[in-house]
Length: 254
Image: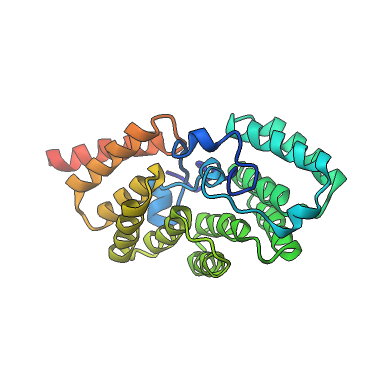
């Protein structure tokens, strides 16, 4: 998968509204990872971070009610795959309350999914400056860096998220992306296997598949790709997973 193919970041429970996405907890998908993973299609999932453990910025306690409601509408629109509506609602929310970390983080995620990499980085840095204790912004920024093959910077962001108390499978997923981008396949495999023992996430299977492909363990890679496609057949990484399955079949036929 190319660098540009989805980068759909994460957004709902972690972003503090937890309502609409709770029932879709493990249902979201993938994008591109750096280097080998960019070519083969590992992804960053915006809607899935959304649907993970709740994590609210301390600044949220000061946010005007109207801005919160607009943010929640934006989040719902994003989960329903309506990016234009989501951005419109976020523009409204940020006009009311410009220093709204969760809204800025979601906005940065959407910008990343639209391949507006520089803008996404700037927006996420703004969110971090406003509330350095809000861990989700670090995870989303790690995804932005991974997509640009800035793997050491991505690692620093995941470490910061961990230091702020966020240790979900999504953080482990971003760590694995960085390792795969650096062709460190064995530790990436260990990370994904450990995360899968604790929490199911379709993206973990996709990352594990790429780690296995890097280790030339093609049969196991195929199994993980099939699991990913079973769990998230319409995900952003689905087509690249199918393409990789075709390439694996070619290898088996040689």
